[in-house]
Image (cartoon, rainbow, N blue to C red):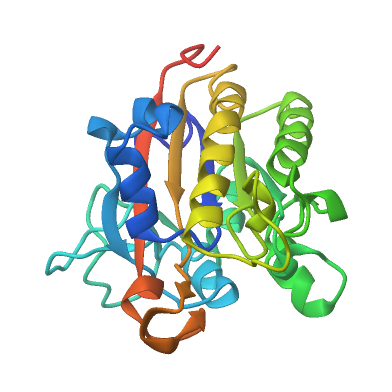
Length: 268
């Protein structure tokens, strides 16, 4: 990362609430052509989330604690705040003295942009302002939220404008709300009464895949790009009687992850 930071625009996309099993099933079936093209080997990496719900996971991720590989570690990290005794900081780790990654990158000359999605990014309350407050520029509006069937398209339009208006290198963070409940409206036959489930979750991911190439294009138009695309946590749809997240269940802790570089102009 010491070679990447400074030379590349940086993109971090969290596909909020995306389950690993659903993501892997769709990838294996060829239903995610854009992400298949982008991810190394066309496959997700199976990892464990640092938190079981959005706020906890993002507080960790934005401090440099990305989802952890499932194999026994220790696993060297890409980014790390400087602190004594870290066993996952190695020479290739990009280190910062600031309390979080956006502020660390800002200190390295990056313009930092947050495009919020779920309520923890809506800036309507002190809590909803905490994570966006780490960034120099942050955006949220109702059309980005979980109740909008076109949330990701609205987020991308905002991101494209923000990146185009930046003079120097950019760190763009996008919290994608489309996977989160409610997601029934991504199914042609979906209804509020039938509610959410695996099928709506999968349809929402296919919706994201249809549009995410625009983000990759924006973040590799001016200089090479480096992207991280992952889930912050999964969610339960009735497994062992559980629904939702903020619980210690396998479908919540296990998440898909991918990182890759993008050549300049590769995603036109």
